[in-house]
Image (cartoon, rainbow over all chains, first blue to last red; front, side, top):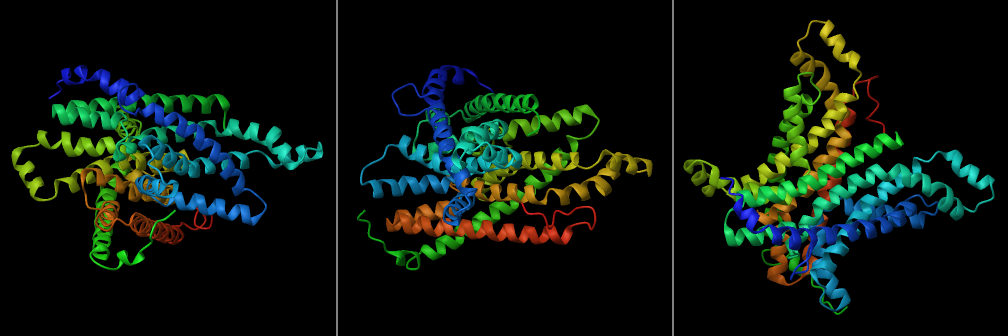
Length: 225
Length: 240
């Protein structure tokens, strides 16, 4: 049942091509996950700030954005990008570009909520203190609120990164050569599903579980927000 | 952008029937998987809070292993890797009765059960320990205390996060298209394939998901108000 030789033989392909993205195909779970979280967080900061804006015409679109993407499956968003990006941009978009855009746009909705919660966790007195010191709203946000909010957000951000990391497996649906797609390719050749899929499950697990331990450690060290 | 919109593809030909059958399959899959997930989640969530450590360890292993691996990997695992290990009779039965549907139920149910379990555990842990001690003092066994005191309160407390997780389950059911379960996203793609009208088809599928999510969320907030214990939980009035 557990013929591990099949895993051993295909280990370089699975790990280098599938996991890291080094090889003949455009792929790699990490190569997709890391830029997705960085860009998604950048967009998420804007959305989180926009949701707290006093002007309704900024707040409303941001709220609609968050509610929309939280009510739609990620698979659907990937297909949207897959079909619509070439129509709008009038050129073929590689799988990496499609998947990256889908993840950034989708995760920004969830990250935006984390940013909002982080900002709201900063005591009101801090805002007043910043104003009393003569800082403008933007300066207070930049130098007083955001640094404290970011610290409070770290555990939720790590948790969201775990979710994103698992979600990148869905990029294989449009043919991006990530760990899951690499396993499919290997399985099509070897027809040994049990050891192959169990092996990639363990690879994903080792990554996500160590991240979740790290999140728990950070939570303890930083203390309750 | 020189895309020719043609919304009529949604109500001519087979599109309407496909969308409806996709919606029904999505609901069937979600409901059956939800029942599996709720049963697994309640049992393992409760076991994670008991004193007897082997049970706690088994439940922890289940939760940590299944929720930390992508659902898509579980779909492939249950669809490709598990069936060959089953007895021949059961394999034949499954092949005649929609193997991909039952594989998706297992994948989605077991994965979501691990996530439900975490929700229930935090619900149980938010109940003051004295409740359990009072139940013990009243002469209940551990099982009776969970059955009649702890779980009825915990299950009410977790309605908001439980609703969130249930909606995640519904949205995650779309991953079943990878093992060719003809659910809503699958049918949306089918309409796209037959009509070459991607935007129209995706809009229709997306709207169905949004309507489903919004209506479930409002039904659950009604349930939350209905089941609130007066004086104990103010959850019904509190906004999520």
